Image 1 (spheres, rainbow, N blue to C red):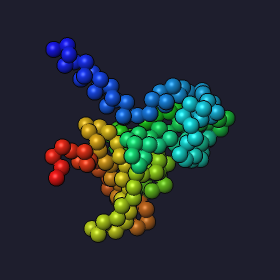
Image 2: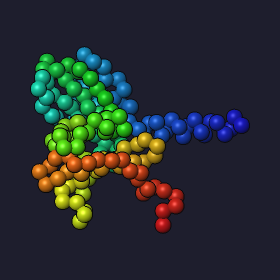
Image 3: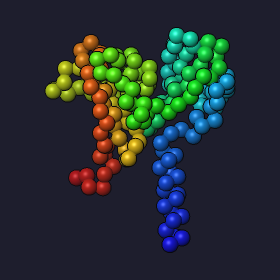
Length: 161
């Protein structure tokens, strides 16, 4: 039985590691912008906020994490969080949020898709929950969110033909 538990624990640790960037774990409120960049590297995007800025560190298009590090006007960390998760995605409000809001809160998507049955872009984020997942955000022609939902990514499924 013990020989079975060791590989199981190792697999669980590897899966947990895939869910986020371990470098972000040490980002504490009060840290400076320079300390964040020293630990995390250059951000994938910098977004102005009303009272500071947001440093985005995204693993998209292939990673399943995106960290947002909010800085105050003096360049100190207010908060740092991994945003590609069910609770965060539930904040999206159809009819109120725009593409700009979505990308400010989650970073750039893994891809932007177009399908014949929808008259607007579909932002696709990769994330991890009960398995490999997608999160789809449907925008209308004016870039306003009309609907959004999660889906399971079957690309690594053993039953795939």
